[in-house]
Length: 147
Image 1: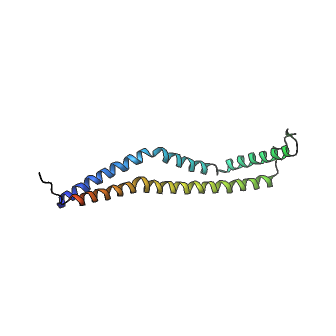
Image 2: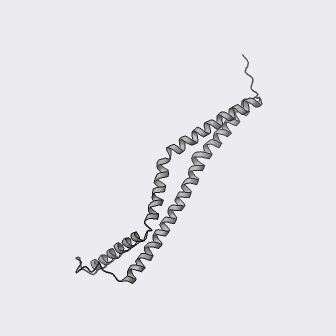
Image 3: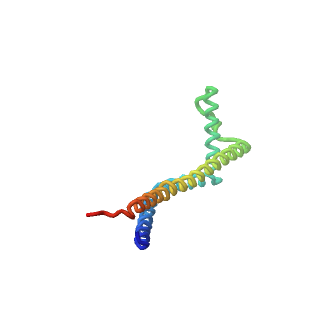
């Protein structure tokens, strides 16, 4: 096979690869958006106002649970609506730690998603196709067909 033919099939293969990559990325925009939305939401929950609200809600839920366990099924006089500052600060720090760990988890998911997407859907298929084309061309390069 001449050098020109080798170059031509590689150019055609390269153009096909570019088209394939653009097509795969276009198909995956919804997945990219889903992963980024989860990561962004995890970051938004770490804002101080949200931390305060989440901590208060958890303190209220804990208080109601304790009341139910003790046999009181109705809240009396807003017992689960006022808390001392130390409890609020402790709950806020606990929530911040948990949400920071959650954001870190979503960050790792984001990195893992991009690495696996790049390997499985972009690089691996193109390498396999290239190897198959090279094998086919190598097998049939000296084949002469008699009529």
